[in-house]
Amino acid sequence: MIYRPRKLNPFVLILPLLFNSCVSLTKSDEIGFRTLFNGKNLNGWVGNTSSYRAEDGMIVVDPNGGGSGGNLFTKEEFSDFILRFEFRLTPGANNGLGIHAPLEGDAAYLGKEIQILDNSAEKYADLHPYQYHGSVYGIIPAQRGFLNTVGKWNQQEVYVNGSTIKVILNGTTILEGDFIDASKNGTLDNKDHPGLKRNKGHIGFLGHGDVVHFKNIRIKDLSTNK
Image (cartoon, rainbow, N blue to C red):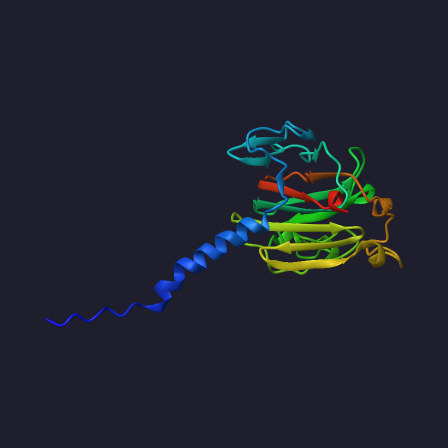
């Protein structure tokens, strides 16, 4: 009998190479990042540690039917950074990501607030553009249409360097701009935002009375590399 070697599908040959390449890229992409949440407790965080709790590797904000849920901030302050995290919304959920924020006062004005919002909720159909998910509240509107279905996890990256900011949601850049330039002729909400001049502060989750889940919260401090 004549032996004829079996012809291999070239895709089968390159598949392991592609897989290994993806794994190495992923690992390389995380160099310099450290976790802000250990998955077990709220060590390293301050604020409302009763409405916010650690549960099954997540930070869960649950106002228990009353109040806003308050705010939960990092003990540390940050200036320039890349923040990565995952979040899962419940129907109609509203929260916020505070940056350069003080521990007291309204972070949306005394710092900056990046919206975390269920854009699909009917009750939010008539918001101002700067109020939808990913927007710098009152300052720069974000693109819509890139949130996963409510109940599914979303991945978000927030890049802050000086007065420039970029928000990447599920792999798509939904906001990129300079919040000083964007407000030089007045803010979109026509309100005073003294926090725009702050270049350092706490990072926090800003409760608005709804249940939201967060996990895999990590940061790369860019200030230390300058």
